[in-house]
Length: 220
Image (cartoon, rainbow, N blue to C red; front, side):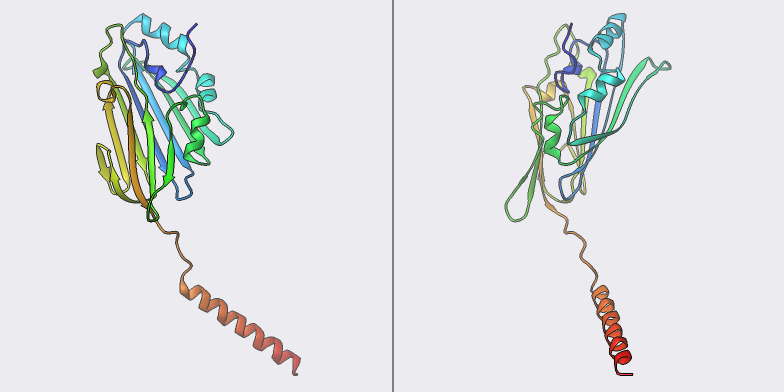
């Protein structure tokens, strides 16, 4: 029996139908965040259906286990079939305490997710997309991988295929991944919102009123 979900790339092996994988990640200034994953495939033959059942990549309990860890919290796992276009889908919503903690899950083993400190108060994000060997005459153009990251700061440099402010998108086919590819970006984190000055003035004013009231009561 095939080993299920050896890593997130493994779900692409042996499937003859097309498969799309999308990962949307929002990172907060403390490196915690949320992630939404949606992958789906269209099966072209009975063989595809058998392999899907064997791998368990569209079995809710299996999906839940692969993305579970003590450092993340899974909010929702949804698996369903759309008979109108002969597709099967899996969706995962999760929260994580820190991005690198996702490396402890089976699904992201080997992905080397990290956020490191850079020079002059900057941070460097990276994730390794592992090489995928298809074989068996599978057309690599039938596989689409999309990674979207919302980084909490001003983007300074990146190797994304698309960028809009602090939203970065990487889109690849299997041919473009080749022997593996790092997606990376450096950014200067947004400053935490400071307490408005008028708050301090209001607090000082209230304090003065209280002191005056206390002393006035004492001298009566």
